[in-house]
Each structure stands twice: as structure tokens, then as C-alpha cells.
Figure 1 (tube, helix red, strand yellow):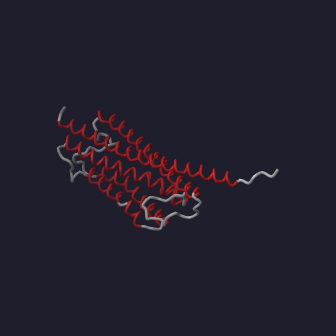
Figure 2 (cartoon, rainbow over the protein chains, first blue to last red):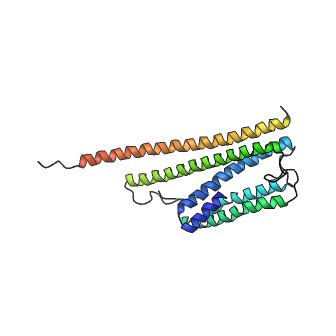
Figure 3 (tube, chains in turn green, red):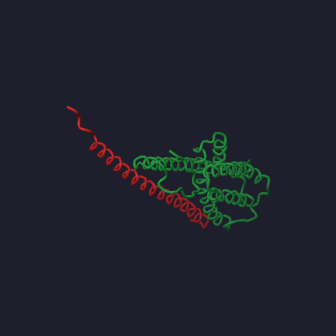
Length: 187
Length: 60
């Protein structure tokens, strides 16, 4: 959803730094989602006796959202023009971002099978609430930290490229621009 | 330790491993940036030296 909010800012202001923020947020979310899918499956095998349950709306809807976001990078890579790439990626990020709360509500309307509904009265046992919120805060802080780190790394790389061009006296690009899924923001 | 707890421990270890792999990747990238920075510092020093050499002699 953070990616969608940054994407709205990008379309409103045309400031490419918001595209970069959106890109990094979605990139980090995908990494954490892979972690959630793997560790969730291991946990489910231990406590439910199954690696995956195809009739459980919570799991299947999470997988659908994950697969939706997994198409973000190929979408970016398929568009060569950086301006068009940023614009289309922002539209995608907004549509996918609105899908997240819709998905959250749809799961609550579906019949509960094995996975308890979180953040609903009577959904989770009382003793799980503390663990759940500590884990939620922890993962949120991890996400913010990694996002900031990734942003700082990208900005530093852009700065280094720009400095190298100035020091070598090369006014143009040293090599023809290569196609990339990552936003190319000038420092 | 019950069977479920063993899987829980495995899940935590996998998560820790994922974070560690990410940190290692970031550390390698940071190392690359430090190398780039060192090269730029060398280029800047070379340029300064070249400019000093080109400076005209002060007129008496």
C-alpha cells in the first residue's frame, strides 16, 4: 500500500523520486512476502499438518496478491522509455495497492476454514494478541529500516555515477543506456 | 520439544537466514560503493595535481 501512496504522489507531482520510493517499497514487500510464504508454510506444516491449504481464503488470497505484485518488475522491464515506465508502474502500484484492503475485507467475508481471522473480535485467541502485535511492530520496523537503507544505497549510487561523469569530464552517458526495471533517478 | 515447536523454530531460522542473506547482499553493494568512492577520490586528487601543475608563474 505504501507503494501505491508513493505512486499517487508520483502521478500528482511527476517527481521521479516518488517512483523510486514506490519501487523500493514494492521491492521490499516482495522480499518480505517470500519470507511470509516460506515461514508460514513451515509453521502450517508443524501446527496444521499441511504445508498449504488451497481451500483457505486467507492463504490463497495472499498468494494472489503476491503473484499480482510479482508482475511489477517484469512490467517495468518490458517498457524501455523511463518516463513511460515510471507512469505505467505508478498506475499499476495504485491499482495493486487498492487491491490489498479489498482483499483484506473479502477474506473477512469468506467462510473461515483453518486460518483464524486476525484483527477481528473472537478471531484470535487472547494469548496470541501480544505476540501478534509485537511481531507486527517488529516486521514494520524492519520494513522501514530496510526501505530507508535501500533508498540511501540507491541515492548514493546515483550520486557516485554523477560524480564520476563530472570527474572524467564526460558530459553524456559513458555507455548507451541499458534497459532496467529500476527507476533511473538523476542525482 | 514438540513436533510443532520444531517447525516453529525452523520457520524463525529461515526468516533469520533470509534477513542475513539480504544484509550480506547489501554489505557487498556497500563494499562496491566504497571502491567506487576510493576511485573517485583518486581521480579528484589527480585532477587537482594536474591543475596545480598548470597554474601560471606569478608575475614579479
